[in-house]
Length: 495
Figure (cartoon, rainbow, N blue to C red):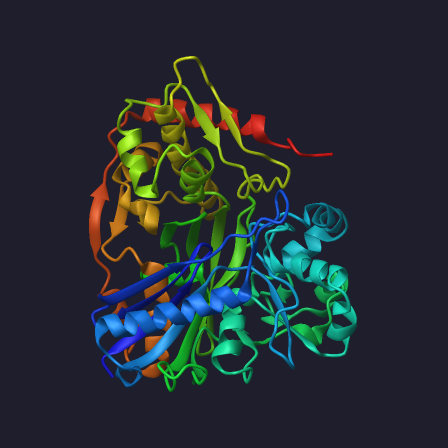
């Protein structure tokens, strides 16, 4: 068996990637799926489309590589986190569309929960009370889908994040499980005891029998048996996308840090074998569990990262495809005094303001679409700088370099501006698909394809290093101006 397969089920597309023993990509297949917006602030996916697109890309990747299922040692699953599916255990049919992590329909409910239980929830889960996480989404489904609560209390329904949904479907309903990293994003899982927490379940009024079994992130769980082309492949790794990216970047030592630029932007720092309580509104989360060893991370979360470029394409129509933004932005020397706070779904770290809304400020008659595009691109770097400032404050250290990955890292103008704003080198990984690579690594370790994390660490290589070119005084002024713009966006939708 010469290869490992990764399922990377993301927010806007499903991808399947085959890796060889050196951690190099052999083949890749990708399929976008619908984004469903029933109301302002609501975001849904069709769970059937998610599964079908994932299976399609897996078969496509295998055919591109000219291999068969028997050549693949194992598959690792990584997924958009927090997105919530509830389905009927007997029929396997979802009771409603999946509610996506970006969805804000439960914001007011979360405000009430935060006021009453915010500190308790933070202590147990490491999370801020927010509509971002799964718990309030489950509660909404039970309260708003006809007969859902009665069925849930009878044990007839199952909840899962997307990893759980995929495993259920891939095993024809035989396995209902998740791993510790995904469980830690539900706001129902105690990261200190590593168990579902009855007190949290009572707060959200969610029946225990709805929940999956929690497993480690790297073990042979089962074999695929629902698609002929994939049958017999061992499912042997599961991790939420950001934890998988941390693993794929080789951040195995406490203090090592990565930032992933995807639909959102997420910075994680490995903090070792005990959770760290943040004083700067970072999230404390489970990184992964391998064998009996659990490792934790501090996380900063930006809800709208690369998605702001998609918004320029789809909503404003000022670019035809996302890759066009670099050329457009390069046509102007600077942002022309324009700052763009893309708080389309509120703001995450360090503000945690569900009522913040998108703001473009500094417009003049001389402002053109290139200035707005540049401000949008720069917003990704500014938000990432806010995450790093919080992580440095919590860890009482100064990071020497930042490892970066994700689709937006192909944009070199962004990475240069990021290095300028941070005033430290930004190091782009040779393998941009580190999220999928992390899932592959976890599966490969469990199946014996790779022997140890030490072997994996030898795979990591830098593609390019971006060193700061902007004077620190100018970078400081930019960041101060950004913070002024952020203040204008806060609490906008509060009622």
